[in-house]
Structure formats: C-alpha cells, structure tokens
Image (cartoon, rainbow, N blue to C red; front, top):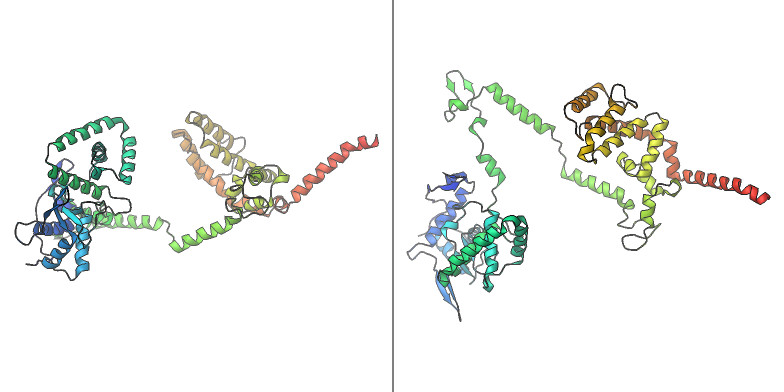
Length: 484
C-alpha cells in the first residue's frame, strides 16, 4: 500500500543536549528527519513490503545485510507517492546524504540506480538521535583504523591528512587517545566476523556524514536562517498593553512591553542598519578593475616595464635596486608618478616621504607628518616601551605647552588627553592621528601634487640640476690642476 510524504506519525522521543533532555522539535531539520525515518521504518519492516536485504556470497567472502540501489529505487516507486524515477533517486540521495543508508565501498554518500550494494545505518547513529561528535572522537576512530591491517580499513588520503592535523592539535593527550583506540579494538575482536564488518561500515558511514569527503556537502550544518527564525523570543512580537486587555492572547503578561519601548527598539535597529555602508557587487567589481588597471604598469611581477628585465624570471635585480634607492638623481619617473595615486603611496616610498617632509617644512607644517610617523612607529614598539613613547609624543605635539604643536580641534584634544590620563596604550593617540592624516590628505597632499617640487621630480628636472651641480663642482676643483 502506498503512502504519501505528508502522512507522518509524530514521535515524542527526546534527545540528550548539554546535560538534559530536550524535545527533538528544537532541531530545524526535525520535519525532514521524521519524514525520512518514517520511510526507513517501512523499508525495514517485517512484512513483504520491506526492502529485500540479503547476504551476498562471493568467491571467498560474504557481504552481509546489503541491498542494491535498484531495489531501493524500485521500492520508492512502488510504495511512495512519487511521480517518476528522478524523484525517487532524489529521495534516495537525501537518505544517503543524511547517513540513513550508505554504500559499502565508497566514502561519497549517494545512490545509483544499479547493482551497487548499500546498507542501512543503525538507528542509534541517525542524525536525529546523535549530537555533533567531538574531534577527539574522530581522532580515536582514525587512530583505531591505523591499527588494523585490513585493506578495507585503510585510511583515504583526506583521512590521513585529518589524522595528521588532529595529532598536532591533540599532541598533549594523544597517548590517551591511543589507549582509547586500543581498548575499542580489543572489544571489536570479541565480536563475530560478519558483525564486525557491519559495525565497521556503519561507523565509517557515520564519520562520512559528520566529516565528509572534501567537495561533499556537510548535511549536519544547520541553516543559520532557520536557527534565527526558531530562536526568536516571544518578546519580539508586538504585544502592546491596551486598556481592557492585550492584543494577542498567546503572549503572557510578563512578555508584554509598552508600545513606546518596543517601537524605540525597532527604531534603534533600523538606525544601525542604515549606518552600515553597502555597495553593489557591480560597483565593487568596477573598483577592483580600475585598481588593477592603474597599478598594472607598476607591477614588476608582470614585467610590463621595458627599462629592465623582469627580476622574477631573470637574475637581474636592477629594477628592484632602482625601486629602493633614495638618491634623487636615480629615482625613475614611473616611481614618482606612483606618488600621485594616493598619499599612502607617497608615504610608503622612503624617497617620497623625504620629499614630502621638505615640502611641508617650506609650508611650516612639518610637525604634522612628524607626528603621524611617530604614531605609526608607536604601533610596532615592544609593550615595555609604549608608555614612555606615548608620553614623549604627547609632550612634544599634543600637550598645552608642546614644542611642536599640531593642528587639532578641542574635541580631539580632549579625547586624547582623557585616553592618556586613564589608560596609556599604543592606540590612545588614534583620534589625533586620524585627524592629522585627514588634514594632510585633503589639504597638504593636494598642494604638494600641484607644487613645482613634485613636478620637477616627475619631469626629471631634479636629476638635471643635480648633474649640473656635480659638473660645476668637478670643474671648480679641477681648475687648479689644469692651470698648473
């Protein structure tokens, strides 16, 4: 007799969670588990409608308690209200992926409509009756497999990699894990051979569900959206206090809140959502493309420059040497051009930082860059030197009688002063550092790009001036020698 998927008998069994029993309906996958388990109970019933399970005899071995994929698909088409074979295969695949049935010779939990052999999982290892196992249990299982000489129990490549990671993770208690594996092997040896085969395959299938083969979906992962919907508290419902009673009879008096408080909470949540910056994926892609197009000619890995050979594929390091030089006459134009991309590119280059320092000195604002560089150095100091360095920076740039005071407003000054008085750490000057950086970025940096100092570097005029000075100096010192 055929039955429909919606005809489910509700079971009130409990599962043990965190030291106490709770209702299995707390699991978001409860309905899916009960539908599959209802069919499994019918498949393993004692009457003639069960899936035919048999022991297959080989040349020198026996394969106990198996059935074929064709038998399973045929049973689903015969006793379940399904439309075609594709739907039956889908249901069978769901059973396998959740670990209710499994192939006896494969780690990939799927079902084929052929003569491949499958086996039922023992009910005590069904996903609705067990919790997520610990890594220590998995380590015991893998360690036990390495102690057995049977070819069918050899570790696969991914299992050997997992074992190596677990050995490193549990190095301090690996001896205890090894002893547990030995104890389990002693118990297994007391069982009959066929029973041992069945238990080994069922244990392997259990770990194939909870520690699947790379590339396979882990069906034990709970959908976060289902969990969030399920764990919503009753107080989130709008149960306003009204004269003469309440709106919803399903909410107790303790859950009710004043309408003003609930609406204020909702307003706060919406404000937080509005404050989050969002950007379309298309805009993100355009930004990445523009970034890589801008830096394409300056990446030595791709070898786009024609001045020197690619140092990544040759032994010639002239390109790297030129990129690291700080001598004005040796700085290439392509390197100076990169200073115009952003202030960070300028300050990342030692020659750019030196040139920018000279420009700020001419504008009588060199203390801004000096303060910012000191704050950057503060982030890399050992903890034992942080307090003295913070006080030194504060006294030099931020104190009321500082030697080189920087231009910050009163609000930032109060924040920094309070941080220094309450808790000195390497981040207590961040407010002033960020303010000065924005000031240099929006004001000083733009003026620097328009200045003659930068344009001379970019056009190579600085190199000519340096060369002229050098030639003049040589002529001056060589003149007495020639006259003599």
